[in-house]
Length: 517
Image 1: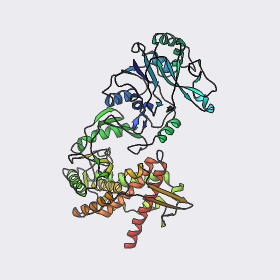
Image 2: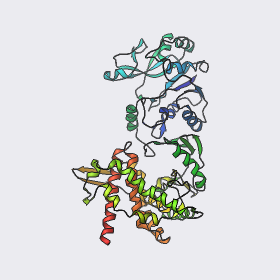
Image 3: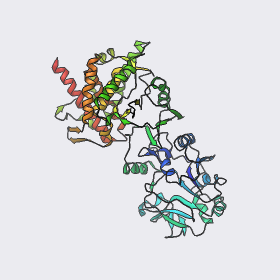
Image 4: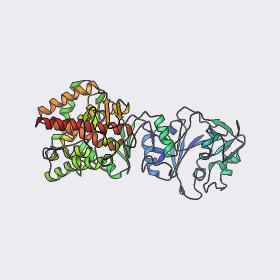
């Protein structure tokens, strides 16, 4: 027997991640296609039909599931009249001259199910009658009587096991279109004694609404999602996806400047690259202060050695763009919104975000910047300590302004400060709280003791190398305000929290500076 995954269609009903094939949408940081493949017998061959965004599917599967026997069938007609799952499956006829199981790409099964073919069967799932219009419906209790459209409580989930394949292919070859598409259900007419295989745990991910419901139900992401980006962790591989091809291209280019401290990567396609999973501990999970001190010294040597800046004026322009221009641009969507109209946070008077930003001494920030080799997102979750104490940095930024090599040393240190106070675990485990009442808000969060100790070491490190720690803090808080935009769609509650916290801490710093004057 063999397996077949139908993955050629456009997937126009699901735009949860711009530009990403619907079969690569992640649940628990694992793409749907991998969830399906992992349900199959490891020894059996898998046929995958591809059409729309074919290279994404092919490159991902080849990189991640190279241990399995998989063959791709290119579908010439994957949209328009006459296309459809039946047409795609028919193109696999030559490869499927044996019993086989087929499944659509927009299916998620959270429990182990036995997908064998000792007989003919189709997948049946019970549905609320009011949702009938969304599905192809089934007549029958134990055996298939007929397939129909209308009203009912038993739906076909798109999965089937074909034992009598010759009869199935003969009937599927008849081009009787349903809604101008060639459906797989045509082939069932050639089969006898088709059993109903009931699926208790079946989830449709074909629409954006249904996918987001499934994603929320099984929300155990290893990494917090961002708008227009995705990370996949599967089969000892890590894959990064970017809707923006230029961002992906520049991250790949930057590895030349980071090869001493980052993993070797492989370009998969114009939107994705991958690397081998790195065994080790995240810095955020380590309590040994000596390891953190050693990390700071090693990073200082990397960043501040061979950091020739050929054009100081361009460097200052990049600093202006990264700190001032970018911040003003990102907060536009929050101006005059409910969050920004709050007058008091934790009892502290706060002004609208634009008034807070106007009080920052941008010239001081830019004129005192330190040219350095940069990482760009130096948070504890992006710092891995291997078993032999080697430091590996992941998830680097694609550029500092327009520069792929030189950035501001303060930028990396402020990102580190940012992650020591509000780290990724707080976000993923929702260890924060926001309470709103009229024009007042209260925010609170849990901090990790080891990271608070690391912050003291960071302050001592700054004094040792004559780096302005107060500036590191200010820029770190500025990052909170900047990243609120990233999570507005995917994690609105966290976006609100980080924006309000940024306003609170920035107000406290500015009040403190004012009082000192």
